[in-house]
Length: 115
Figure 1 (cartoon, rainbow, N blue to C red):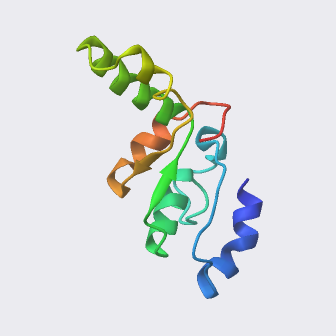
Figure 2: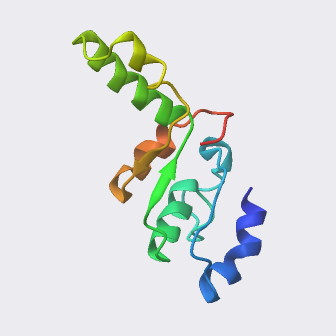
């Protein structure tokens, strides 16, 4: 929720912890697309965190699940996974996200579930 990040703004800019863990629902966090405040949209929040040095981003949720289904569907269609590996290849998993992928992560996120 925005007020939590707002409350942590001073900590994150003055004495940043080495790791932060966020639970976001990007579509619910959007408030204003024209505000200059970096915390007013999920994408700008994530860009702001990148600018602070938090560049190793991993996520789990709808977008990651969708990506994983596409990868495993492709591998399975080629006969790549035997029955013994199918169970091991199921969720939950985490996906890495680079800065250029943030808009896709925000846009494709589930409307009510966290990412």
